[in-house]
Amino acid sequence: MLFILKKWLGALLMPLPVVLMFFLFALILLFFTQKQKLAKFNLLVSFMLLFVLSFMPVSEQLVQSLESKYPPVMQPAQNFKYILVLGSGGIADPNLPVTGQLSAVALSRFAEALRLYHANPQATLIVSGGNFGDLKSHALLMQELAITMNIPKGSIIRLDNTLDTDDEAKKMSKIIKGQSAVLVTSATHMPRSMGLFHRYNAFPTPAPANYLTKKSLGETPYYHYIPSSDYLDKTKVAWHEYLGKLQNLVKEQL
Image (tube, rainbow, N blue to C red; front, side, top):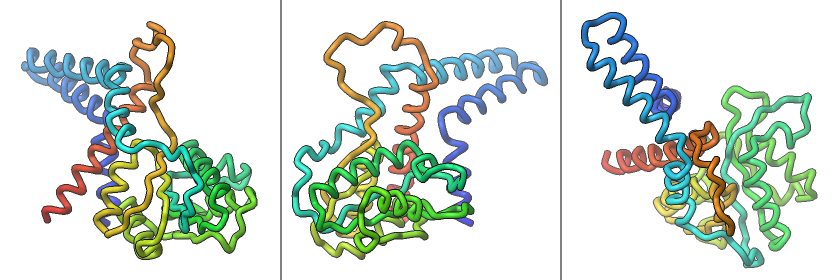
């Protein structure tokens, strides 16, 4: 029950719902009260929030502040015993191949894990993620993809019942027990994930994947400065991580 409540609260605190709540409050004031100045102020706040959160310099800075915490693994052959891949969503649609059932984020993380596995073929791959009412767990979908990529089933450990990153870190830490491991997750997600693993006395090598910001050697076209839903989506990813960090801080104080 607490987990479901956390998911609802987290969804409501994302950028777009927050903007819409300000906008709805402004409309209520505008049409049903005499507080016209306050209504106009809330309309202005709604507009400014939407503009700023979907503006490229703001979005890129929020994301880059997270992605720059840990460098990518450029030399993958490091004799890792475990490759840990955190869950990231998918839908078990039997009408699609497994590559179509997993989210783009999951595929990006798996691509990095596959690169690491080819450089460390002795490693055991650990995949995680529950089903949350779906026909198959996320971990099972990742295992199916790994097998199609010629990773032996015997080299895969599946954690089907993990609820969130904290739960993944706790269960994976018990498995690796201080042995050489590499952690694969999105670059934005890596700082929070590493913090949770450290809490459970596990210190895997970070291998960030799914980078949302990249440094161009050329000039940025001016049209990139037009507010866009793509930048709003990037802001949402960073926003989610900052809320997750806040939640972890609160849990530590309790």
